[in-house]
Length: 272
Image (cartoon, rainbow, N blue to C red; front, side, top):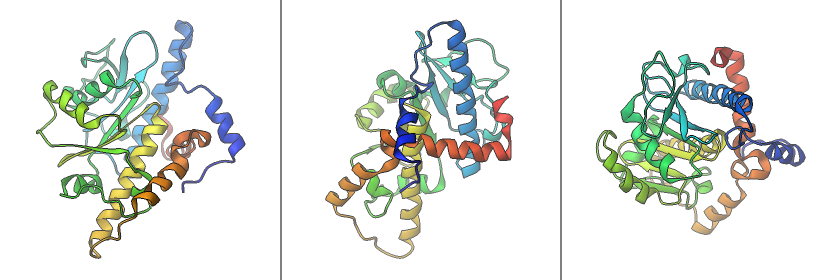
């Protein structure tokens, strides 16, 4: 299991309002909340780069900004994840239109899938999409994710699949994608990559990391021959026992904070 703090500290952390879900009381509070979210999101882009999850200038992590308007933060198109900062993140609406001014454009193709999910799922405050080698390999396989390792066993009944329809630039794909996603929090985009959603950045990250790690182990296991399948009842128990998804243990918040500390030691410029 992923390491956590003691239960008392974890419960205190959960009781502290998350900036993603806290309702700003006035303009000053809203600005402060957005600033905190910008720092955390920019730091998460740096985490993706540190983990090797970036894809040149492509792919996205989108995050809703609390408030009466349905606005989101997204990476500026044209920058590598190591160049994303709190101040250059771009604010957009559900149609991908820029709110305010930015020196950078937004990749409209990249936001099509995100917009469909943000629009339809109230719990999708954060949506993450990757093209990691392991994730894409499993997405290209006929079997998809196999229930055969420590990490896949923690994702029982959490993963959905959506067939490849080409580059995601057409809004009419949205309803079909949403129908396939249903109430799941993880989506394998066949022949394409992985996607995760969550009520917070930390929750979405914990889900995506676990899925990607399961794909890495599956890819390595394939070189050794057929994998041993984990019984369904054991997988269901593993999913219930998985600490990184448990609100009592921060639902991934401790993990994200630990990785942000690593990023701070490497290059804290994401806070700018």
